[in-house]
Length: 287
Ligand code: 13P
Image (cartoon, rainbow, N blue to C red; front, side, top):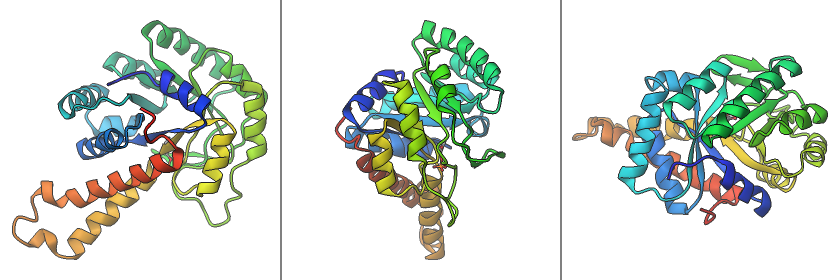
């Protein structure tokens, strides 16, 4: 069932667990994540970056594929199809293409401009029943060639954006995309605590879920995080399983070169990673 992320995140915040956003790159990724969500009876958010959207031949192709897959696979758990780190124009395109949720990442704009653009999108999303994620304080690391420094958001600015009527708020708390460096200082729970004090019931979003230790994930959830984004970890699992298949020479045995066989171990690896995260985030059985 394709739905906005509002209800699933409101429930998650109240129930002190988090819903995973898993980024998709192609048909196999999407199928693996949807099947795992159904098997685990968990709500799920499919994330699509602008780069991944382009790779998959545009947002309409993605939206149509996801809707058809939900139908054909008989997926009954709540699924949100969400633009990840969208530009203002990208958000508009996804809304037109049939996404049920968008993120507008205005964190690189001065706060006044971030507020202005976010406000316009709140009006559009509200009228269509879509969920909207906004961001304050850029997330570090590299994503689609954009490198952020891993700031800690200003809690007062978070409150200003939260008060605009958005559905969920991503705030930088020292998290970064991709693998964490050995000298990473960890998440700033003081910042997260201060943000939650000011934003109350607003579901908070933790980006850069790959490689955050389990105890930090639990603490972040206890301080109001209700959506956790994971991308790189599925990519690493897929690559490792595919490498193993080829290194073992399995593509050279029989019809092992058939893409349906060659990609199967990678798909199983994504499923295992998604299941592990759903268990860690506490969303299993919460559909
Ligand atoms: P990772 O690639 O570090 O898991 O981050 C994903 C993310 O935050 C997508 O917005």
